Image 1: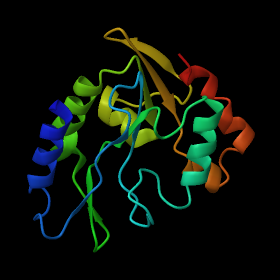
Image 2 (image 1 turned 90 degrees about the horizontal axis):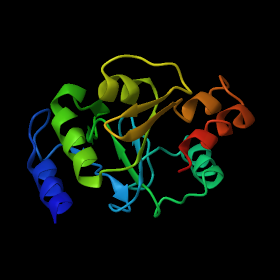
Image 3 (image 1 turned 90 degrees about the vertical axis):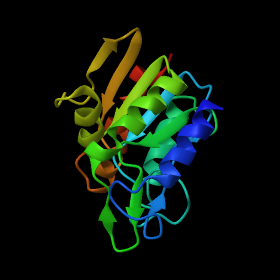
Length: 168
């Protein structure tokens, strides 16, 4: 019930845009999961109502497989909750309390921060990819965004190595 209440609050939010012009992409997956992924922002080019866009989705889903997870077995959300059709992205500072409340409601044992924006937003500063921290009895893992594979910064083999840190 708590997540549904938060979701309705996000739907009514007009901090960045009017309700008529925005597209909300709330978290998806298992709200009772021990593992939560936080990405950066909804993709402007997404073709489904899923976190991680068309180009990064295959990389992310392969990563999940290497963690022995599926989209339904974990919870996946973004630091920024909305986009608008005109290719504008919401203000991360205005979404921060929504994200903090999502983390509180899901209460994961493992929190995976996907990309520099998610890392800095949740931890308050940048951390090196591969960093694992213990915060408030929660394992926090910092990994690169899947687009780093798409753009050739990491090979898929290199990227998948981060999966070992995500497992419970």
